[in-house]
Image (tube, rainbow, N blue to C red; front, side):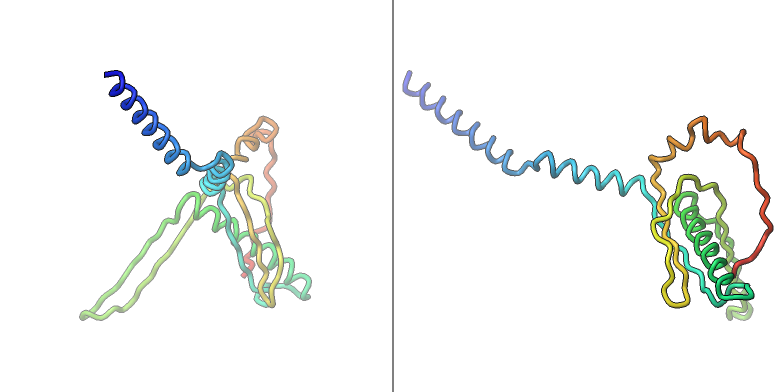
Length: 165
């Protein structure tokens, strides 16, 4: 009887040790888990966008003025792309068919929204194209909503409307 009890105890101990070893060998280290969680948080809360603008197509008497307008246009395009990612795009589509033949196909898109807290990652030109890369970390919005950024106290600056491209 005692021998049977001892044998069961040894088998149970061996089983517990083998299960524990197999579980620990499959588990990730804390550093791996933290890196994975950090990457997932960045993926969940960070938006990036790229805006492009052709330099030669900009209005301006000199190349320098055209370059400045391309810088502005590429930044606006990048902000537009961020707004599209955050708020979505409203699409209107219209097709016209006569005698089973497509006569016209029109698609309009529109995006509207306020983008705050984005930062410029890179701003550069490659050939005749000016490129601006933006990043918006949604976690930084907490700081922007602080009292010192209260929009009721801010003054609105009117800027002359201009089409850059």
